Image (cartoon, one colour):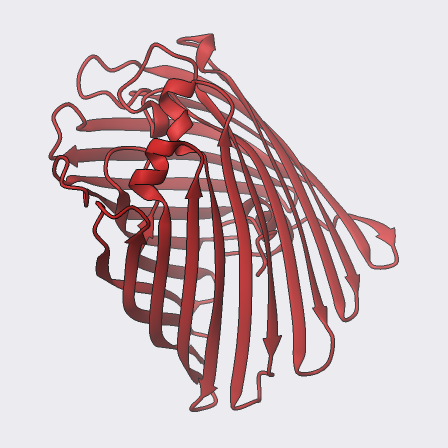
Length: 396
């Protein structure tokens, strides 16, 4: 696991097609590098509360200072990352927020065939009005929560070996701190264990088999009756790396959601996890990801049978100019298994484009346009929004 490899950190330390920010960092000695940075953006959101009618627009100013720390000690790699996001809304200051994220990670190559990884993350986040726990609500303050994750993995094998085995586990907790009427039933713990077997069938291809089990425990009696239980996922597929031009993996199988309460039926569905990267040129990268998974719901139903597909294209036209385009389709099926009500189905489409100007290796100037729309079989939940933004990314 490498949960510490977040997009901002990757942007600050790794060259990609659409970002020229490649800071050297501040060398602290003994293989330790400090990478501070800051992002500033101003955006205009046409529908901040995701309303079907009577939309409220707002300009939003966000400042995100961040710092990454890398320690390269040979067989041991340690990483830390912290960011703070402060955002101000001109329409209503009650929507202002201050989010934080801390991640810690480490990888140790014990021998040529054995490696372990550990990661920890702590996120202080929020649900904006009109979304998540506050869907359809515009008169209360944003819901604030804390996400905590601790995970680890152990791998036996090597790139040249016929068989590689990875076992992993994680502990996750989500806890809201306000708006108890809307959030008390959303606090829960999730414990996940799993194993993946990879068998080498050629120099470029491995066959994959994975089994994953998760247990869910909610805090309140009502949520326990509706959602406590387990998720079992069985997957098989393959991974490949063809001359560095095309890399990816796909796994297909089944996911079974079982519930502790006798009145809630179990449910099994087809599942998949697919990711493909195509690099026709060093300056152009196309990524495709798609998945079907059993997620927790902040809305109705016993769980969310989610389907997600995203395509991103990063293209560098010159050392100064680059473009990033994205398109995604998210389908939420809020599955009702206790014979109370019917399934709610939402479909959200998002598309966006961002132009990037990079006058030097520590600065990106960006301008973007994003459009999103949702259709739902529940009354009053359709919406459209448009976000125009400009900003800078500065990394040292």
